[in-house]
Length: 100
Image 1 (cartoon, helix red, strand yellow):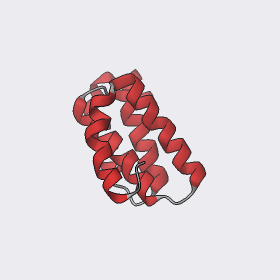
Image 2: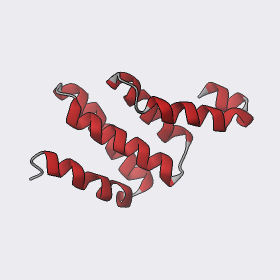
Image 3: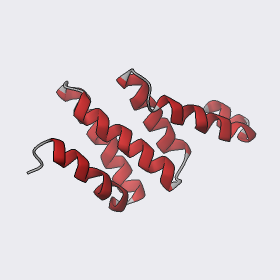
Image 4: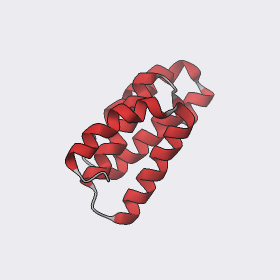
């Protein structure tokens, strides 16, 4: 993130690298990539990718405290970018778990 602020011409390269990290094997790396992507871009593609990654983490991770942190980030995303993006992404999550 520091590189993007000091060298804006590197933004495209940085965003491509962050997009690649969304599919990293480590849940911690995925989480950090999603949060970083949310802070660097407001493009619909970036927001959808970050939200999708966070929703997948909710399904994969079993620790309740991690789920709470991920849900907090999703709520931040909902507040800053509107419910429309999350509504489309929330349905697949509900198909895999109980959404009452």
